[in-house]
Image 1 (cartoon, rainbow, N blue to C red):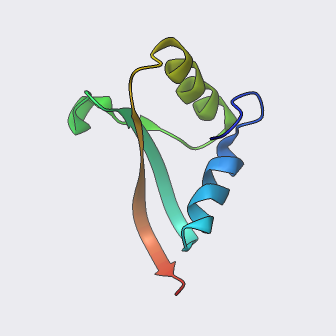
Image 2 (tube, rainbow, N blue to C red):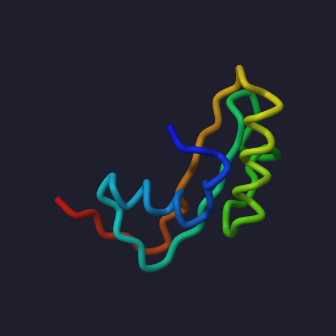
Length: 78
């Protein structure tokens, strides 16, 4: 679990890289569990977006948040 006081956009990207993603061109999005994809996706492109995600998680402790990758160009390391 990440400490929200130190969490940032780059920590989010680092977590995904630990899963084997090597990005050259991508966009990240997040949404809470009950939101639909058409209206519920929120951009995750900088530390302000990371702060918005963290604030949502603090207010809604019982909700899950999903992080989504828009693969514009991708290689996965084995």
